Length: 310
Image 1 (tube, one colour):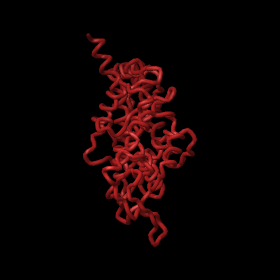
Image 2 (cartoon, helix red, strand yellow):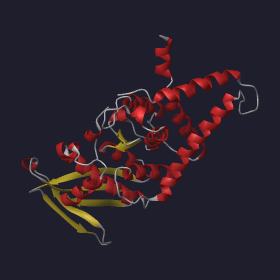
Image 3 (cartoon, rainbow, N blue to C red):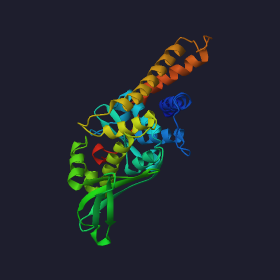
Image 4 (cartoon, helix red, strand yellow):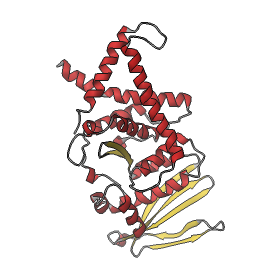
């Protein structure tokens, strides 16, 4: 009975580790999370989801994925203010790496956090819908007309567009179905069934990701947020060149998290606290956490990788 309780408690230390790092970043790096976002609840929801995640060979993600990739995925999720409980993100196994990916709802939520953003939306255009684009006086692309019709809902998708409305105006991004297909062909999830079965939502997600990337790379927002958003988007593609600058800030944060945890474990193992005093009680807790990290990779069961969004 005691072993069962211990096995249930120890893995949660990983989420506590990420939560502690997020709190440090709020204090020292001006990280600002959404007003109604509870990072602890989101991390707990993520850990419950991770216990269901498997790789293509139906092996538990928590068993096959590297510790670093699990921590980074959880940290990326939290920095963007997302939660799997709201269907804003999900986790996919690539080899020995765990990656967090946003859903359409997650991308909308993340972009809305950027300064000055008032509204974010994406729509698909079906065959025979009235759709026209043009340019404003600044030679910026605009959507001049969009009149969808109910009778066209089951007709082929011919394109999609995204709108990001800010204090300074409205940015539009338009993609043809051919461009959307080309984007899907570059994802790490080849022959994705979700793209076929839920093509409308997936097309919205694809065009919004492109719009978000263009908007983010010209924004003045925190590198912590923009780096996490860009990194999550780039993770999905095999051959997309990544923007190193914002991602490096995020990578540094993850490295510091892991390094700080390791040093903390070493100090506790020696029975020495941060202020140099004896810390025998914390030594026992340290061993419990370390054991928990080892047993963490023997937990869990998921959504097959070929069913995940791209």
